[in-house]
Every structure is written in structure tokens, then in C-alpha cells.
Length: 68
Image (cartoon, rainbow, N blue to C red; front, side, top):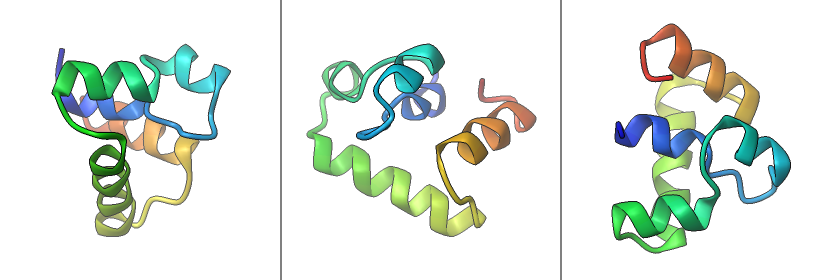
């Protein structure tokens, strides 16, 4: 599975929404062999770099860019 798609389901506060999108944060960390803090930093950088605000906006952006 594409790492970009894996990042989409990493909501620490998303709960059910994260599972609807893809995987839980723990599942993503296990598959990518990273700790939760690393995953959180990656998501924060994506938000900052692309001016994305929030989980829903991230999912929409990823789909528009062929990642989901």
C-alpha cells in the first residue's frame, strides 16, 4: 500500500473516521515500522507544506492528487 494512503488514516483524534478512511494510527506505525511521534510529525509537515487544515481537507487533497 502507498505510504501516502497510509498517512490518511493516522488521526490521533479521528477514531471511527480514521478507520473509515484507512487504518488506525497504530496499524500505520506497525506497517511502516515507525513510532507514533514520527507519524504525527510527518502529518504535521504535510499540513504545513501544502496549507492543509484538518483531516477532511487532507483526505480530499490526497484524493485529488491520486493518493487515495
